[in-house]
Length: 510
Image 1 (cartoon, rainbow, N blue to C red):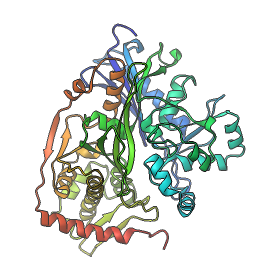
Image 2 (image 1 turned 30 degrees about the vertical axis):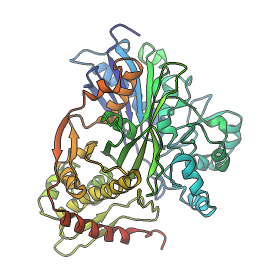
Image 3 (image 1 turned 60 degrees about the vertical axis):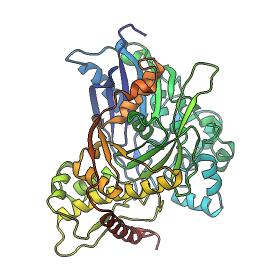
Image 4 (image 1 turned 180 degrees about the horizontal axis):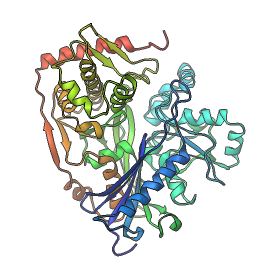
């Protein structure tokens, strides 16, 4: 490692774009490049990505951010202390070990094609055992049934997998494989715990589940700590080898970037979906409210000692910022996403109009794959402004439902909610969120905390930061939104919302 190595290169591979961010030792972004890639929708409910295109876009933004550099000066690879990877989770890639080429498009976390397989397993009484082992609910969201579908569908794939010719990975694994020219096939517990194949208690691949889904063990990556050096980038990519020192799922990365290091701290990320995580400490907390128990992160320790694992409760709302995209691309009532705030603010209320954004079903705490989006309560007086406001309320009200379930499961009364992600910049939405929750909503100075959290984890592994206390000192509050409605108004709003949700449930399977 060069003496002048002072930056972490954080790779933030998301659902719609790949980003590369240079983070300095003070936790500041010193440069960023971003590139969108194509989305494929072959059938209703199917969502795919070209994994090769994901890698190409990620490599392109790495080179772009280094060439742009800092203050007009390019940053050389020997100025990088480490590379950190954070990624969209559950998205499933299957590739040829010899050629490194994917056998098919990646199946994205939003994809619902394996709904029937999940229904079969539910009917066989397997759901409770799967949840006890993995902390997850039996749902097409997770990787196991996606991988099984690929092995069932691609000719000869399962036999090739048994012979060790193929490799499976979520996007973190795919990026690490390509960064190291195939020398590293690894994942971390935060990503592995989202596959529905990992035992949440041992943090090892579960042989019973591998047998259930007929997945050959030879396909699977090695599980390594979230924070720790797992290998080096191929020297030919950037000009010299750079340590890869963190791999972490995007929502867990945002949690770490929000400095939610203590039990009882919670954050919500407003991205394509909404993802709330609550730190439950060093032991997994089972959910009785249809939430997910998941690994937050595992911090590596000196050889011979046991890594420290932090667990979380998580609630996933499928349609967050994607609801605003639908207003723009589906209805055409706004020209760009930022326009929604002014349009929604042009009316004082929703005029009893509710939008339940169940475009791909409902996530936590209902988990209804057959639910469909519902716009209800319209009259001749309903305008596009009312619909825009109802869309924002629909996002915030979904978050309230998972927040309440999280408090019930954990037994913790949450005092505040830290927020991040693109839509957290919408002041009207954040005020709605505080109003409907009845507690303060706190937005940090840096709202793009996903890349920051990954960088912090890599910085711990390479001793830029020595402990979480030094990282916590970099977190600063930008604005605090206080509740501004009465408890009676809040309850009336939630009651009406729940009536709308009930009407959306089961629509695709009458």
